[in-house]
Image (cartoon, rainbow, N blue to C red; front, side, top):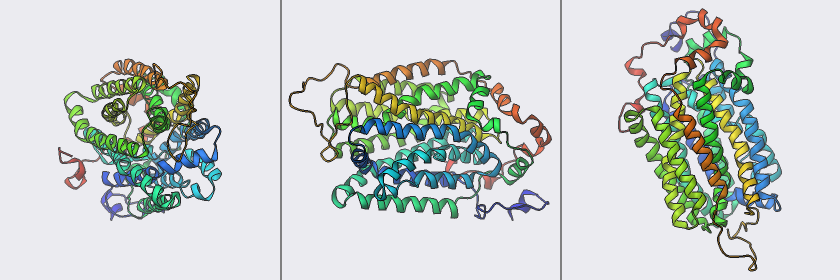
Length: 479
């Protein structure tokens, strides 16, 4: 039925994973993201315990090394996976990324060493967001993408509203093994959902046309991609903005819970409540507020606003020394969560319709590089200022400092966060120069496929949208 409605008369070889019937929807992407990160959210408390037990002497430094290897591999592989998904379709690569991202979960209790080794190696395929955003770009119009990206990002926040608290409760009452088992079951459900329910989003006509064109390995090479991006001022400014703003965010994510427990002396219950509060506020920010800002002040100004919130949040984390300051800064952190979906919407506007995967893969690759550099950078700055995060009692969550140590608090309790605020300030200054018009960027991304594009120009033109092609989740303005 699909082949006949698309008007394709020639024989078609169906990819093995494309047997699912039905039309691709944003809700499919939402479910995939929710299940994946809900499973990992359950492991927040057990992961800290296993990390401390496996590397008791250099806990934080080893965490930075593991995340660094994973981030570097993600940076190297994300553009290639995005480019291949432009040709072979999104579903198969969505299945691969979800599988390898969740593969380390059961190894946490089987073998901690294999668990951390698998986390590092899984970075090759742990680029689910890259494929998801390309999936969403395939099935939405340009004016709908900011709302759709906000919905996906809000789903990520929603998955972390309750999962850390649930994982902490199960761990305290039934042990870490049950938490790992529940997380593994949820991961298997996510993989089965992609395999059996999620349909292909890339239109057959566009995908079959792409089969006639060889893959440009220069396009998939992350360093070649960066060199090509440097030729276009608009894309270069966006990439620099992403790097400078996400580097401190990645470092913060890797160390902030330990920082709250040791320096600010949050209890495990308070940390779970903090995550839930930020998650709920992030959902509101990335759905209602993001849509409102995109319609009223525009895409670029929404990015600037999000960077402003992030700058304020990191500065408050850096100078804050009381628990109430962390709670107040957390509300600002939720507002700053509008930055990435706004940037993703901006990127989707400058990319050709057949290269959404490659462009989103490039942005995800930069974020992957930040995921590697950020934890190591924050750990090094903590070390320079004699804030040792590896001397944490995993059972009580209290600092194991001796009574002889001075009790007065330093002038700057969180120096890495203050350094991150300086980076975000630079990102804000760079983002100011992003032009509102972006015709040059589209031309840059299509340079490597000029010949194939000219031969297949008619097939790349978007088809007129019918009423049944309208994404129902995006019809309601309140959504």
